[in-house]
Image (cartoon, rainbow, N blue to C red):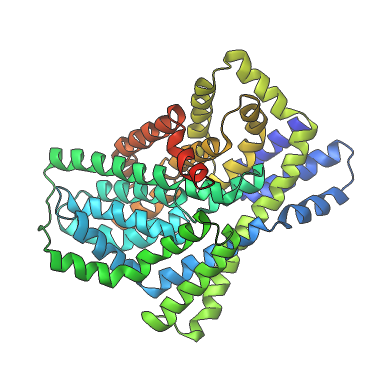
Length: 424
């Protein structure tokens, strides 16, 4: 059954069948080959979506669509530019800072790359930045979106493993800030070497005006993180609050959304939600076969034959993630790889929150590496540069993100201190 599953899945991907359909068809073929009843298909796919945690997915996606349509991205960009635009390569730093702030609203790297890229890549090129560099820095900054709350990949990881979504959300805050700093240091070094311009040092008055203009957008992550951090709301409840907040801002503060726009926004959210849920449902069949064929135990034994040192095991896993990220989407990789690795991680007593952060961060690097690299594809298109040049330009940022991942591997407190301190 495992052979039919893996070969069938690989062949379907080679002929460009979408990942969710490839998983479902290969799993169905394996079930038929193993003589198991076809009724398991409906039962497993239905049961996998019957989860209270998964309710957060459509609500966070809806809040992201509402905030994107409200036009708040423009004010966030202006605020970020006022704070860091005066540094050497200032627009690149503003790009990273605004990407960090926007990521706390969308929870999606590709959505963040589209919104920030559309706002900042054209003016960066006009100021003399190389198009491949603008694409690389924007795509790299978008990876922070899956690290800071509300992160859709973290919700998927929680569903697969049973780890608390709230712990993962809060655990991603400090790593997300470190990612931003690492990318900004990389940008500064490149900007100095290439002579990129710096903006004018802002006055306190201009910073104050930019802060007041963006306060509604800046308060959104505070609502999400604060309500979860202090036990006021569960992640699912926080996602509903985020929708109500985004709706209020769009309708009555910015007045850029009308009630006539709501059906279209809900339709777009439903399409995106359907893609995520279909992948989770199809992966439940995959998980059934993986468990029945004892693939996790075999994988664990293979790695433990090499080493039983938790640090080295996580480094090996990171290597797997970097390769897998070049081949499949982030969400699909979580669904496929984590069930196989989870028993090994637990047997070595690796902290589940640390493993979750390493998983999301390690696999997010695949968003900026070809041939799959969805964020890099988007930003290269906006910058009107070819993927090869963009891939070369993104290499220093990939190195920076790998170093951040290694930091979390060797110093787990970076990811675990904040969520566990919240529990007293």
